[in-house]
Amino acid sequence: MLKFFAIGCAGGAITGVPIGPVNIAVIDTAYRHHLKRAIAVALGGALADMLYALIGILWFGPLVKTRPHIPPILYAFSGVALIVYGILILRSRPVGPRSEDDESGNKAYFWSGLALGFALIIFNPSTLLAWVVFFGTWMADVHRMDGIAAAVGIGVGSFVWFGFVAILANRGRRFLQAKATLLNRIIGLFLLGFGVYSIGKAAHYWLT
Image (cartoon, rainbow, N blue to C red):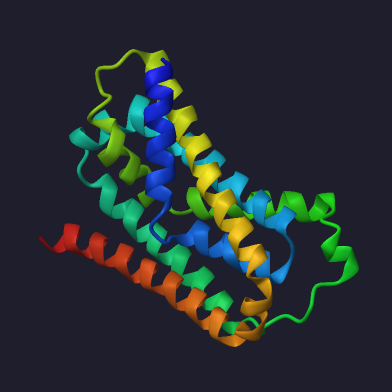
């Protein structure tokens, strides 16, 4: 079981390295608010990663094999959600220095950050397909408890990476503040790009 937990930790950390919606949201939150809320976003994303990994390993992998029409639906849904979020970021105005109340990192900010990180993964079900690709087939025949250990490891590894990104972004906040408008545009365009890519993958399924 420990072996599968370690494999999951490595997988969660490694798959979090490529820039994605949660990485972007963590950076944006560290700039706009404070480290505590950015850590909450990281935790929310990691919990959702763990949930999707658990579903992918224990149930969704075999289902996709028998129902090939499911992946394009999930990719299309992901694309729309990411495009909407990207547009909201592009339309938002750069914020000024955070207030003392915001700096304190109260409970409301923690829960809203947690919800944001969780939603970015849950409303991006192509993540579920990614875990099916990375782990679902390989772990199809493992013991159920080993699969659960791997999924928990994925959550831990994801949180470690996203938390590391939050700390780096918080340390570089003065630089980010000087580039506020550019940061908004980069974040929004990244999200739009991910959304268009997901819809393109859905279209590829339907047209070929």
